[in-house]
Length: 149
Image (cartoon, rainbow, N blue to C red):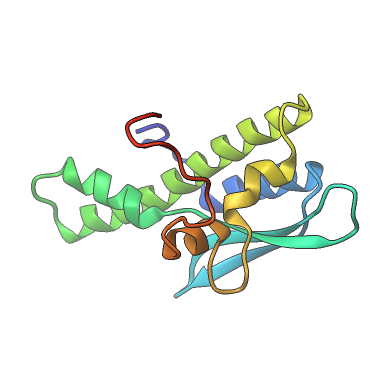
């Protein structure tokens, strides 16, 4: 896993992410915490050719990273488990930083639009656009033919 040894504090990584997003046109950047732990960044994007802003929520899954890191450890003391949990958070946010920087680079190259990149993460206050599609069995997506990709 990339960045699994990152020693960069989450606060510094998130500061860099905010800087990159702001330079890409994001507004109203907000940190979303649960139980004292940073879970996601939320921000707004303007729709192309409009002043209308849409909310976007980008989660960083430290829990998923932690599962991968713990799978590599056979036995661990409490202190080791605590360090793995902290490392998982650093790694999750560094992965998010890498992804955002690559996506913003593609936007700058005019290969994609910001909305195109962040569309799955548009937030309605309860769920992302992708989660809504999934809950509805992806019925809004066009149907392909059986056996053909």
